[in-house]
Image (tube, rainbow, N blue to C red):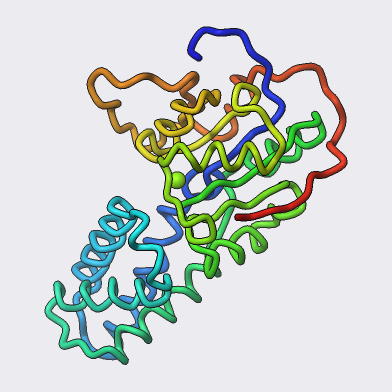
Length: 257
Ligand SMILES: [Mg+2]
């Protein structure tokens, strides 16, 4: 609860735009796909990038449990199909699938943690904290993402929307994660970049919430504020009410769903 002294021994992180600069990575990947099509079909690159960004951001904004049954690669092909139509490009399913495949490849190439993210995760491990990643991403993309970013050795659990069949901000996710990690909500922090996805559900369950305010989106009127607000991942350590160092945990059983 806000203002209540507490000690944190478990830290959960959102992944995209929290530990890595996903907004830059996906827009860059979309531009590379559009550049390829400009060479091949003479499309307007800016128009297609804008259309894809609109489709993709709409998809993630609206994501709910019912979307979890569609494989993410099929969803991406649909997003590219819709973006191509919106850009006036004659489209067929083969072209949309090819765009989605290129996009997936380019996106994997461009992954990069935010400055300070790896240091934070390592520092929390050394302090003795259990760590988890809780994302609305899909197993088909986010397992690879975590591996490519080198985060896997530092986390005790990776909690993916389609494996859990739940989508943040569902509070049940945070109860499930705490049970799986053997943690108490009152001793657990959730760090994320979206108030509506990362903070609301975690706060309901009683986690200590940290908003990384990179989007500068005002909180809804009357909303319960996060326990802490920072400007970047590098500032998170300074706001977590950690107890004395306990040394790195021996590890907990890894259950992902
Ligand atoms: Mg995020």
